[in-house]
Length: 178
Image 1: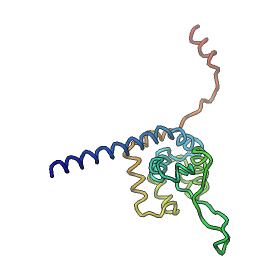
Image 2: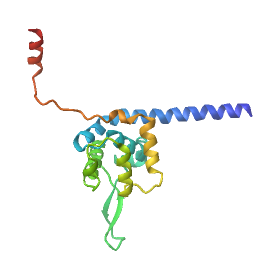
Image 3: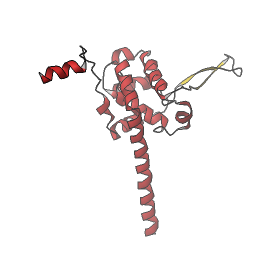
């Protein structure tokens, strides 16, 4: 009995560490794309990464691996099996970057976007997205919130500020040496 309990504890710990490692690897791989969405669209990078982690299983889902669909995005596809001639299916993206940028563009077309653009309170975004039927699960907000908190994703919510004036590097170095 004791051996069984110790074995169970060991395997639970190992699987937990593997899951955490997969999520951390995912964050390290895609944080720059989340920054790009933040800088282009004013959507918190923590929100982008949290949703992507949740929807793609930290990049391990079949949809993510085969179709580069990190966000569970669906689109209309022609179909002869329906009266309208269309059906909804998961979108396929050529690259991971295309999926992230599409997510930013898609969100930027929603009614709530203009009131939230630039607001780094991810919870306001989650509630607005849920109200707009982005996700159907009643637990979606809490799942994404847990991802954001577990991996401290709010540390990514500072937009990169572009310099107002461009100085060539050699001009700066010459000025410092003089």
